[in-house]
Image (cartoon, rainbow, N blue to C red; front, top):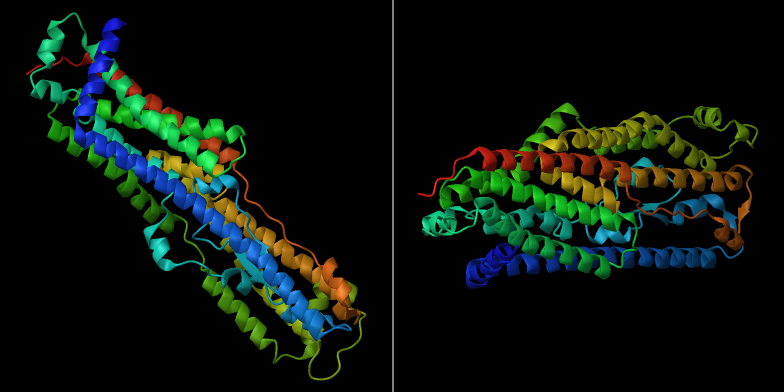
Length: 460
């Protein structure tokens, strides 16, 4: 044990004297802190915007109360009154933004046709989509492997190139002890840095301590171990430092960029997505065409869906709000199959990614982080479904006013439904991803064990 601690001490002295490694480690630390700052700041900005939406809604209601102080036709209120369906972020989303700054996290809704409102809400900057997220999950998944490569690419080759390995082996020290000391020291640096950043992010993001703390830290440790295993597989080949560096960078490029890009192409071909634009255009055609159709034809189709309003008064004159909202409703009905196919397509695409992400450990880990933070695609689909249910509740609230021709008074605003939705973690995806990550780590270390056991060390 004394020899082991002596080797650790010399590893520390070598690390401290290597300015390149010190700079690399400090840059990784700074990148991690910036990732924490960016992620938590983005979530805080979204929370502030969500709070502002409540103010906008209240202001809109006050304007309508002033405009219609004695009550009015509910059709006026349904047309001019806007409310919002909001996807409230989980505190963990600050650690892994996922798709929260790509997909809308709020949708402005009125009593009009739903589908165009769902997919017309684009509140993102295209340049941000192009550049992607820079959060703690990004630093851990994409930058920490580079730190491990920088620390481990010459872990044995440098000793041979400097002529110190024969001297070490001439002492009563075996190669396994040397390798163990080098591995332990580098793991202490990387895991210590990764766990420190994770704890800082949890405190900074004010996450509630729950099972996800243990899951997050477990994923971080296993992911770093995977890359250490990859580095030691390359080291076992006993090539020079330049070969090791190029090979490890090639593996990083393959796992983080090339394979994900190929998987993306395959998924796009295997699971093509119907376009939301096509859905919106078709719905608008139906809605705009409603002006030219006989009112009786429109109302008969509507009453087939809502037979409880069949006995209401016949529509007289050129315009009536209930007829107007009826053909808007029929516009949603006309594209209901397309809307369902679109959301089912999103779910199917996500499931296909889950099936294929074992081919790329970084993709698998990113999927785990997003699922843990409630910032993945299924969470967004759940938000769309909740917005749909909320719009249905608004219809159920306003239709009795419209078809019974009851005046909408100021007191009725307080009875209007409110939307509530908060992203939640997907523990099934986390568990499946953690299982695949564990198998990947086990596989790479089995390879390391057999390589170091069976290879004959070359000291020259």
